[in-house]
Image (cartoon, rainbow, N blue to C red; front, side, top):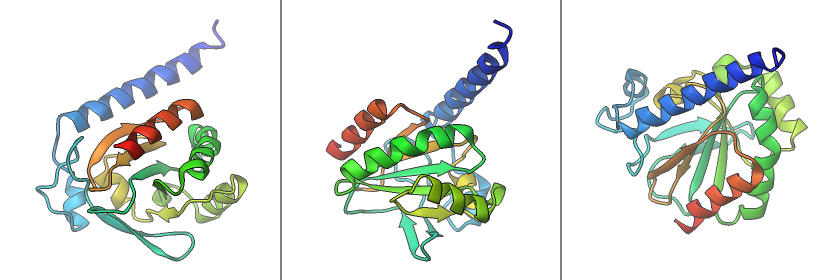
Length: 185
């Protein structure tokens, strides 16, 4: 029983953070000052059923990726870090779901590089053979703009660039249901 106490405490803290983050998005609070510094219109709100703030980041593959506005396919933006235990748990499920539905949705894995090392990012990506683009948030401005309190956090964005939901680590079968809803959207 005492052995499980630290694990239970951490789980409760993470659940509390998830509720806090969800409530802050529900309340449609304004994007942080970091968003304004990153060139995002200060009138843009980070809220469900509202357009997401746009950003452009470079990927590990050297290409530039853009989020915001109209898209050909819905998008999942997953913020993560190589030192994050739950990110390691989540990676195989993300890969599995992406490979099953890659023709119907895009997935961008945004590494919060400011708090990570490029060497570890590359190692993580290789370890899980991630087939989707891995973007580098080297300054941490995108994570601030999206109010990332902890990783992993994923944003489900429809083809119109509208935030549909925010999710955290899910078992593959539940992740599958969320992605299906996003695709059918």
